[in-house]
Image (cartoon, rainbow, N blue to C red; front, side, top):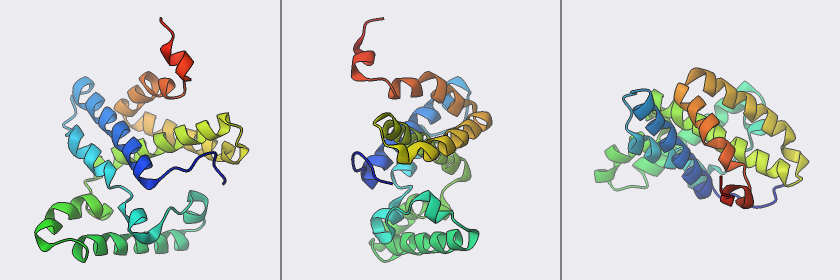
Amino acid sequence: MTTREAETCAQHSFEVALISHQIALIGQIKFNRDYEPSSIALAALYHEASESGGVGDIPSPVKYYNPELTQQIKKIENEVEHSMVYEGLPEYLQAAMAPLVIQAKVDKQTKAIVKAADDLAAFHYSLSEVNGGNREFIDAAKLLEEKVNKHCQQWEEVNEYYHSQFPACMQTLDELSRPD
């Protein structure tokens, strides 16, 4: 898929961290969840560390083309994450960084929130591309909308974020700056 503008792994991870943090805050404040929003945001910053560690961004249609390929890609990502921690960092940092960089070590609840935020960020990006005339993202936007809806059904805090904050993400600067 071609894009109107390049998106870096750092930019994407930052957006996922912001969304994850908001979802966790909503869960903590509105739904009395036992979340640590800052820790969840930090986990989101590292959620695609293997991409910057050499694996690169593999488009979902390729990555999930068949289960065997997916398994091999996940294996490579895991090896890169381990290498980044255990070969790339001083020993005194390894224990602190492993639960952030190595995705298999991330707490399941945190991982679920980050995944929902990841799909929301990807959905937003896809909608932006479609709105900019890039038809290559039409199918991706539909698929991501289905994923987001599933997250909304599973998590009240994701549903709240999606309905209370996501619409503003799709507004133009003119729409956002109009007085009520």
